Image 1 (cartoon, rainbow, N blue to C red):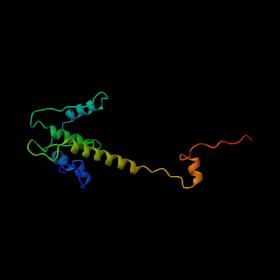
Image 2: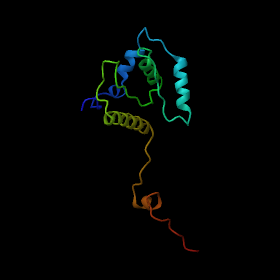
Image 3: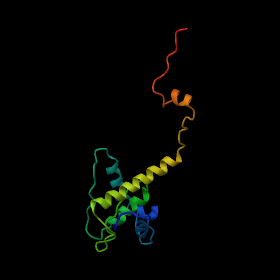
Length: 141
């Protein structure tokens, strides 16, 4: 399905090429004051969403690209490159699928860096460890 993340690279999944096309060019002007306001608003526990509006050409997409590059752990979804070029499917299903895959990939990379707990190998370990059903009682001695 068009717009759904396919077997491409992680870079494609996270729109890294699109982000670089906005941010890694000589004419890009960072908007630290605007990014700071957005980051502060999103850090507020009472903030459930943020609506960014401005005139066409004001730099909304470039600002979001800046925020995405500065915060690589944030999920992101770009609907359009500009007002004429859709990037793919903008259905709710496509958006949620891609965001879900970003979250799963991020979780997988965080979990793979941790060592996994050792599983018990003997029946005695399984009974006495977290796999046991009840602790054994000792008889009065």
